[in-house]
Amino acid sequence: MITDRFDRMRPALISLGLLAIFASGAVVSPASAQSKKHHKDARTCESFGASYGTPAFSNCMLDQQRRRDIKERDTLEKMALTSQLAKDGQIMADRARRQRCDRNPARRECRR
Image 1: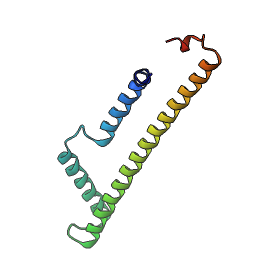
Image 2: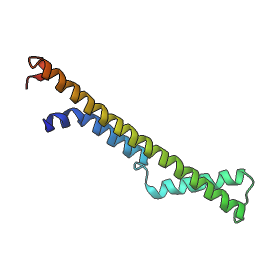
Image 3: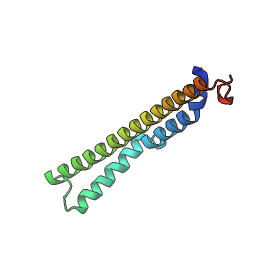
Image 4: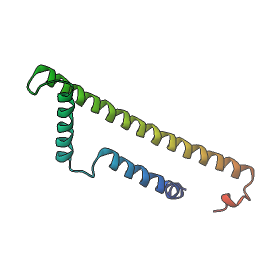
């Protein structure tokens, strides 16, 4: 029964794992990604009129990092919610199948 459930959930688990890998940015080296983010943030702050080395530039850089952290946290929360919804849906589907099998054990889905 446990292996049957796992076999049915395997494609969803693989998809969720791949999504997590790509969403985390693990495909690009962390140092390269961090450097690109830093340069992008510096350009953004300079476009706002903050000069490198000023308190305004430092505050802008901190704001950019805070914005990115919030976005990443929101993404992780959405992924956790999606995972929980999928798990709850699987539990409900299993429960409904058991109820159908209790009512009519001759159903094809109940023969194992």
